[in-house]
Length: 80
Image 1 (cartoon, helix red, strand yellow):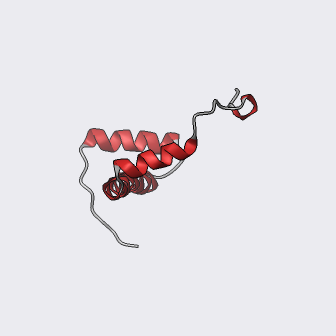
Image 2: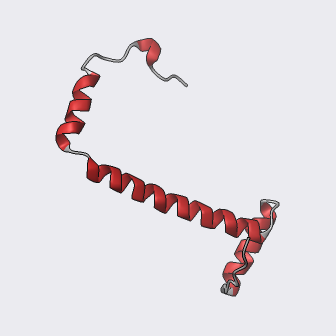
């Protein structure tokens, strides 16, 4: 574990304090989770960009061609 001094505008600090209290957690935990979510989102986007670069239109079409054209079976449809 390491420490990092964080400089926040007062309004952002107060908002974080309010949200952490409403979530029954600490500001530290709020910041850790927020940073982890941001890293996850950015790495997920990067992952899909890299995967997309490896693909081709022909390969995508070949995959869709395997799906077929039959209508979904009624019992397979999602009902709510």
